Amino acid sequence: MDRLRRFMFGRYGGDELSKALLILSFILLLIMNFVPKDLRFLTILAYIPVIICMFRIFSRNIYKRRNENYKYLKIKNNIVMWFKNNINRIKTLKNYKYYTCSNCKQKLRVPRGKGKISITCPKCNSSFKGKS
Ligand SMILES: [Zn+2]
Image (tube, rainbow, N blue to C red; front, side):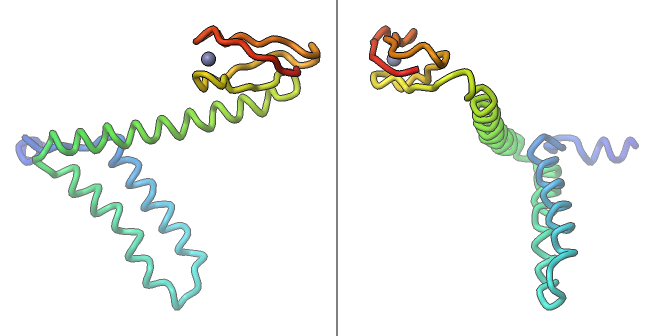
């Protein structure tokens, strides 16, 4: 245990991006089970994320690895938020209508079934007419 700790000293170790790379590898390996036999050599590709993951864990360039992880988390967060927003939007589409403010591009939600209404953007205070 002590030798491992000494070996890992000054090395980056695992993070969210490494975990994602392992999962990606695992998924690719699963997919390879359904690939025709003469394309099985592509299995090698499934090991590339693992190799990158290992490289990152044992890397001594902690600053660079941290930056990569930060970028990955930012992209992941954007994707998660996009899905959350759109799922929520679809769920509430029956009761609400969505507008985009022509002035500041802020997304606005108004209740349906109120007829012609004047919509005021809470962000930039510009107002426009719309049907709800
Ligand atoms: Zn606005």
